[in-house]
Length: 220
Image 1 (cartoon, rainbow, N blue to C red):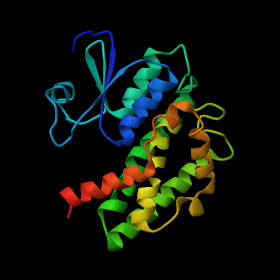
Image 2: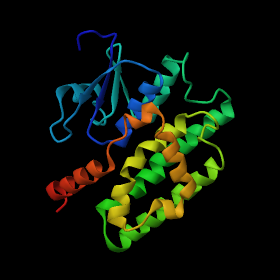
Image 3: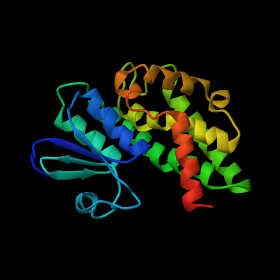
Image 4: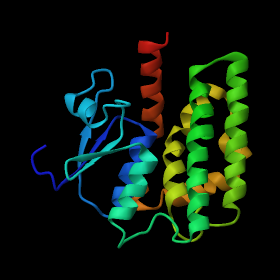
């Protein structure tokens, strides 16, 4: 690894999970080295640093790995705690933030992936579940600028990388998120005005083309 004091992030392509770590690091203004990983031919470094799941993202700090995107974001917040807090200090609010970030992983990601990997009735069920989950998040957001209130934070970072995938979900599923969740789209557009987000999110059309390429190679 060379200099073990430096921060290294192992990521890959258009992964929303890798984007979470990148946004958190940008919010804290932490310099780091990004190492893109080929997940069809995993590097020895990735296999060493995440020997359990063998997937990205992995944050390497002082030569030691931190795995799983939400754990990485929380680690970043704890280690570099003197700037841009991402989690609330109040224990209840912190617990709520963790709950809804976990909800994004368990519900939003699960259904969103099935939209472009399935067809027919299964896809319709996935679309319904995806939109219901977004509506629940929209209720939590209410009239606040961000899920953290006036402050961009943990839940925002958990969810905003999905925004650049919306075009893909909408194209495959033949629907529009904005028609169902206009407040959530306004929130997303507000988030993209932040430099940490705008410089991290992938181009939606490039995401779609990447998914098409993936499907041709591995699913057709």
